Image (cartoon, rainbow, N blue to C red; front, top):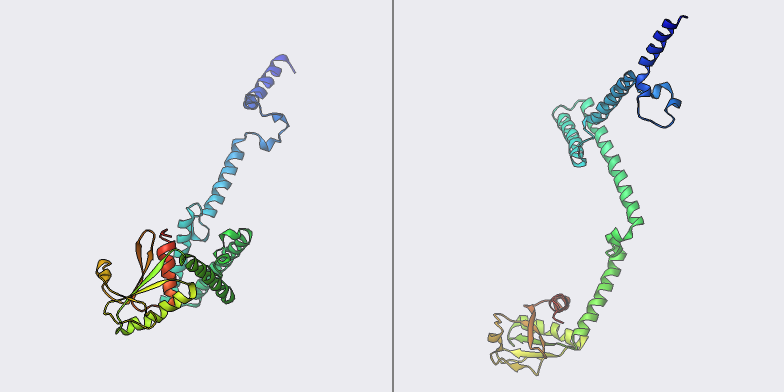
Length: 264
């Protein structure tokens, strides 16, 4: 081979591979397989395959999975609704089968979600409301007992700092009924009760009652029976019952008015 031919071959090879040697260093790039090199035809094939897969994934189940989750869910629900409407209007076996299959998918997805939800509650019991608020019959019963004991302890504690005023009329049937309930509260917790008779007739539960000296008007009492809790040190007056109510309601009203309002 003469010198001129050698130069032509060298120049041709240099031209064909110039892009390879002009690349930025990629470590031991000469060790890469030929398929990994910058081949425009290879890139075109990869891009085409990528676009095909992307298009396929975006249109699977008639939904665009690149949408936000809430939109994707809405789209899937729409597919089910459309299938349901079609099966109702034109109830062919094929239409009904389509609905049944879609519903089966929804049920499976719901089952998966429910399973993960329960697993998370086991791993994170602080997220489980039933730990503090049981839903079983036995658990509910025990919770009520515990709540009642706590309530009674609070009502008992309040009796050391407050007194009760029972405003009534001796000839009022509701007042007569309420007198027995107020007496139960007094006997159960040791509350001191001062009865105030608007009509001067004293009820047997509170024989030491006083005649109304204008206190009903001063407190704006518009109906009886009425029960008020009074702080003797601050003379603060708080209503806890109007009309004929139960002992349980009277207890809860005490806690509501004093503990939750921070007046204790």
